[in-house]
Image: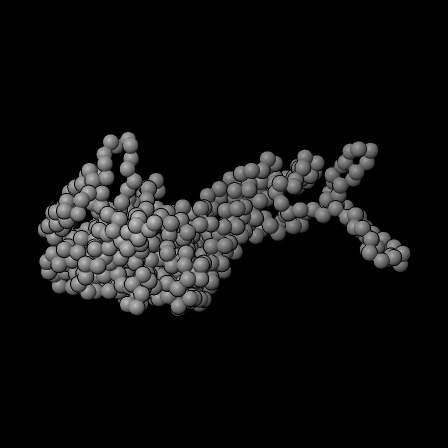
Length: 518
C-alpha cells in the first residue's frame, strides 16, 4: 500500500537492493585522507547535515550497471527544468520537516496540533505540485521514470487523497471559527462571536482627519513563530477549543491517526536525490570556468584506461578561489601496461597527478561525473594508498619499518582488480636500499597485476618492464627552475634523481655557494 516503503521496490541511488552497501555508521575509507577525498566530500555535503550524505560517498558501487544507473539520473538532472523542480520539492520537504521538528519543541497541545496540520498541508501540496511538474519533464533515466510512476500512483491513491481531504476539511473548519475576548479587571473571558458590530473602520475614518504626518505605530504585531505563544495566548486557545470541541476533537484524532504521514519511499527519495544535487552544485563553478567534466566509460574487466584533461578536484576548487589557472593532464594505460611511474623535479605536480588518478577512479565508482574531457576507468574492488606518514611514538617503528609494514598489509590484501597509489616510499633510507626495496615491491605489484601509480625518484623503476609506463613532470625549457605542472609520457631523464641526491647531501649550487661564501 502507498505509505509503506519496500526497499526492493525503488531507489533513485541504487539500481538493485544488492548495490546498497552503504552503512549509516560507516567511516571514510582509508584512502580518503591521502587523496584529499575527505576535503572534497566535506565540501560537497556542507550545509546538508540533515540528509547524512557521507555514507553514500564513502561506499562505492559494486557493478558497472549500478554506475550507469546513476549516470542516467545525473544526466536527467542536468536539464534545468528537472533540476529546478527537484530543488523546489526538496525545499518544501525541508519545510515539512521543520514544521514537525517545531511541534516537538512546543508545550501547548492545541498549538502542536495546529502546526502538525500545517506540516501535513505543505506535504500534500508538495506531492501534488511535484507530481504535476514531473509529468511535464522529459525523463530518460530508469530511476526517474520509476519514481514518476510511483509518485503518480501515490498521488492518486485513496490513502493520500484521504489525508488530503481531511486536511483541507480541517483547515476550512478551523477558518470558520470566530470568537470574542472580553478583557476586564485584570481577567478575560472567551466566548463565541455573536454578530457584534466591527467599528474599527468607522473609528479609523473618524480619526483620519486628525493625522499630522507620520506617527508612532502602537499596534501589536503578532508573530507566526511558534516560540512567541505565551501562557495567556495558550489559555485563550484552550478556551476556544472548549467552545468548538467537535472541530478540535477531529483535529486531535487526525494528528494521532497520521503521525507517520510521510511516505517512506518519498522520504528516501528526498534524501537520496541530495547526493546528485550536492555534487552538481559542487562542480558547477568549475564548469562555469571552462573546466570539463565527463561521464566515464567504466569496466570491471578491461584495464585499458585513459583520461584527457583531468585534474585534482579539490585543488581546482582551491585554485578557483585564488584565481589561479588549473593545469590539466592526461594518462593512458593499454595492453599489458598496468603501472604509471611518475618522476621529475620536486614541486612539479607529481603528487597532484597521483591524487588525480585516484580521485577519478573513486568518483567513477561512486557513479559521478569525473574531471576531464573524456575518460575510461576501471571499477576496482579496493583502492589502496601509501603516502608518507609522520613517525608515531606509540607504534615504536621508524619510517622505513613503517613503510614496509604498511606495504606488506596492502600487498597481502590486493587483488588484480585493485588499485594502489604510492607517493615517494623508502625516502628515509639510503639510495641503494631505496632502489633495492623499490624493485622488490615492483616485482610484487607486477606479479599481482593490479593498476598502480607510483611517484618516485628512482628512475630505474620507469623502465622496469612492459607493464610500466614512464611519466615525467616537466619544466620550462628556458628556465628549469619554473614548473609547468604538466605530466607527460616519456622516459625518465635522471635529472630529478640527480637533483634529489644533490639536495639530500647539500651539493646543489646554492647550498655549496652558501657554505663557501666568506
